[in-house]
Amino acid sequence: MSAKSTKRKVAILGGGPSGLFMFKRLVESGLKNLEIEIFERKAHLGSGMPYSPEGAEIEHITNVSDNEIPVIFNSIEDWIKIAPKETLEKFDIDSAKFNEYKVLPRLFFGEYLSAQFELLIKQAESKSIVTKVHLNTTITDVVDNRKIKKVSVQINEKEELLFDEIIICIGHNWPKKYEGKIPNYFDSPYPPKKLASRCNYPIALKGSSLTAVDAIRTLARNNGSFTHKADGTYSFKLDAKSDKFKIMMHSRNGLLPAIRFHLEDSHLGKDSTLSKTQIQKTIKENGGFISLDFVFEKNFKDQFKEKEPKFYERIKDMNLETFVNAMMDYREKLPPFDLFKKEYAEAEKSIEKRESIYWKEVLAVLSFAMNYPAKYLPAEDMQRLQKVLMPLISIVIAFVPQSSCRDLMALHDAGVLDIVSVGDDSTVEPDPKGGATYHYEDENGKQIAKSYKMFVDCVGQPHLSFEDFPFPGLIDNGTISPARLQFKDVKKGKEAFDEKNKLVEKDSKGGYSLRVPGITINDYFQVIDENGNANDRIYILAVPYIGGYNPDYSGIDFSEAASEQVIKKLTA
Ligand SMILES: Cc1cc2nc3c(=O)[nH]c(=O)nc-3n(C[C@H](O)[C@H](O)[C@H](O)COP(=O)(O)OP(=O)(O)OC[C@H]3O[C@@H](n4cnc5c(N)ncnc54)[C@H](O)[C@@H]3O)c2cc1C
Image (cartoon, rainbow, N blue to C red):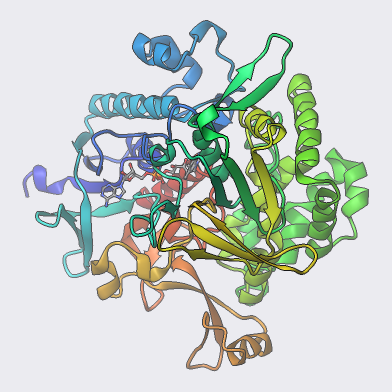
């Protein structure tokens, strides 16, 4: 056999942040005879969706700072010492004044990620790892060939290449339902360029989290201007031509997201959560399940015993439901923008003193720590997780950076930004002439139907279903399967089934399961086939397609942690 044919060929499909972390892991793996091919739809590597013009304009910022980003090749602080001058000038970055605790313009972060890719490619070269980069190349299908133990990857609907292993890192996908068919109806605010126009009318946003903040930053700057005065005040003034411009956010509970505070180290606490060995032991002892209450006790409440005994006293007798209710009650007591201002002051103090707000940090850790056990939760606990914990996590985990907070407060003070609570049953009716009508019940039980000339759906990346999977070859051959969770309590499963819950299925052994979004994966992010077998050749790190078994979208954190699991298996 020639030396060439003994090469282990690994393909990374998608060259965004997850592809970058995967590449780093491979380069550092020590694997011999490696040949890596990277396929990227766009003309450059690294920036992916959020850090390129597909997801950002100059006004958009990251929600993490250098000190929270795992080192890829070098830190941002080190990289800016060698970064092109034009790049630093373009983003007004002064290397002498760089502060590792500050968030960054997303497009600048994208440039950093691209540069990291280039540096890693050089490192690979020095280790005799062959790297082939295919830019402007879209993967259109993937087929697993069990007989020859290779994966066939189709490029631009034509050429097919064979690999020993592939890692799917194709990332974000924002399906369009009405956008393009209905004027001024947007299924997402991305790319934000499409919102950069004069809008002399009220606009409805669905959602109030970071995705809404992205839309607000772009819309506001195209219809008015912000002024920073010497006395420290920050205000917004509408352009004369936009005097009817107004943004109304619609959210289920009328709450604004939490504000970024000082985070010493985003990994803080992650090591003190349950280890995989402990989790596996519990699963074995509990008939293949881990309970949400157990994870809540061990990964959340127990963390406060030593570090925050006062907070522990307050919550020690609470279960998940009572804890979430207490937190929500506290937040709901004040009008949303008053609470926002109060939390802003609290966060400023935390930043000034460089002290974290511990319980918020631990909640973020809990959300992260839910990922691994999620696929072992009984279906009834997953329903509780989705219904009870996720609404709180989505508020507390989406930390709004300070400069975005100042924008929101200035816009609210100028009377052009507000939020309304629409409950769980609101609907949005697209208007064929443009925009949409929002239907909901107000706090007094009155039915409201309000029309807007523009509507932007800002709920964030949707969890995509099995049927949305972009590579039909993997569906048709049964290489991938829909993610399901078994009901532990058969009675509860039967009840849900009898209530005609479309997501509940009955199996041949009389058990019941709940369909959760996306495809089935194991702990190593390998795809699982219809018969429950893990595939040794195909791995997936694209979060929209694995949302059921991996319910938390921690971005850069996720890319780092998940790529570590993949490399463990590849090097085993
Ligand atoms: C608006 C927004 C802002 C965010 N901000 C932050 C933040 O500040 N901090 C943080 O930690 N996380 C943030 N996130 C989370 C985010 O998920 C990750 O940071 C990151 O984008 C995940 O990288 P990825 O490579 O998995 O996906 P993506 O960034 O989507 O990258 C996927 C790559 O694959 C390519 N691709 C897709 N399909 C194909 C195909 N068929 N063939 C070839 N190539 C393909 C795409 O062109 C892209 O380059 C943000 C997310 C969004 C949506």
